[in-house]
Length: 133
Image (cartoon, rainbow, N blue to C red):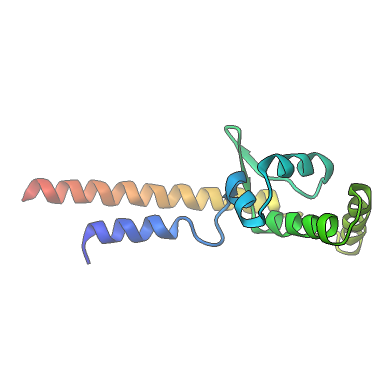
């Protein structure tokens, strides 16, 4: 296994299914426009993306919540107020729902930073090996 192969593999792993998604990626997944997602953020307190330098990062839980909102609004005909009540009632039944989104977001970003450090170390090793040849 070459060092280039290792770098490629680590880079692919850094964007796994568990990775945070940008608003564009979420919009593609849910087939809705990004401005709709931003609007829903203002209306539903359950959606709390992690923001870093103005970029929103969504967890899988956020995406599931957005998917539910889309289903209630577009397929079942609920109003925004009706969906707010549904989600509020769901939170009363499960008070721990969404409690760790921020913690999870921070953990994933920390892991991503560690992976990026590993990539840089691999690249450094590769450059040293190339200079030996």
